[in-house]
Image (tube, rainbow, N blue to C red; front, side, top):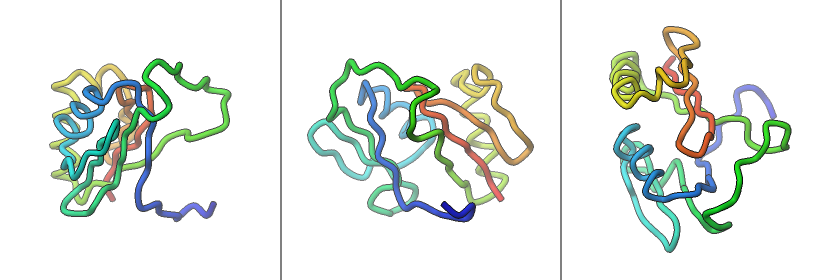
Length: 124
């Protein structure tokens, strides 16, 4: 795919919807826009969803190995440095940024959600 490709939303299989709710809504601050049986949908602003989490494949599936073909990571672009700094402080309060030791630059951090899904959080 071209380097500047943007994807409108991503659907993630998770092992626990409560953990997904805490991480994406309470920690990252995304809005819960809707629920569906065994699925939660989150968005920035009023968009229908940017991130969907579900347990449709089950709740006791092992994480994919690093050698597996599939999603390596996805990115969340924040609108400005102030929002990036606010998010970074929230991650640090939850011991997520420190645990991941993921500060790549003053504009980018690489974190992992409770299912070890890697997320690049950044601002331009």
